[in-house]
Amino acid sequence: MKVRTPAGQTYRITRRWVPWQRKSRRLSLDGFDVPVDAPSGDDPISAILMVLWLIIALPIIGVAVVVMLLTGIELLILLAILPFAIGARVVFGRHWTVEVRRGFTPIHEERAGRWAASGVRISELAREIESGNVPADTLTKQSTKQSAKQSTKQS
Image (spheres, one colour):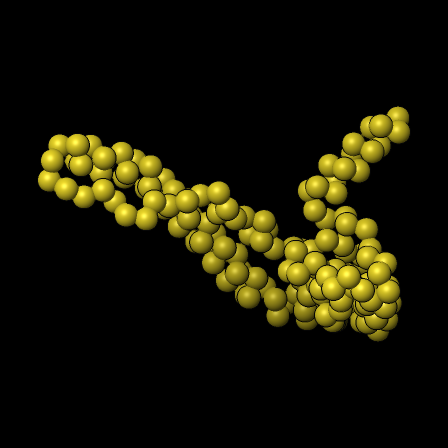
């Protein structure tokens, strides 16, 4: 379910279909800038610059390729396991986890019971968010660090 706060921030509230979160969501190549063009020319300085460019660019390109391969492998495993995870959840009556995302970044999760109970909890969270009561940010690294600092200060 997609909802907006009174301030206009968009949130998505959904059931998590598998019992884990994708790890590759947290991998990013932010901060890696691949040089656009390699130096060219026939003189010795251009040859040295080309070697330096390759020394810098190849590891960056290698990291990008590895991240893309790992993300692809994880997605294939997810697609292979998904039917079994959903089937087991339905047959054995496993509890559903409701997830709140700001944009596409998960910020809050909670166990909500069976299918009907999780649907009710999704509706409740949607009403709360629409009224401006956003649930506590329990999943991002910043909120974990801030809560650790606050508990240290209180001690």
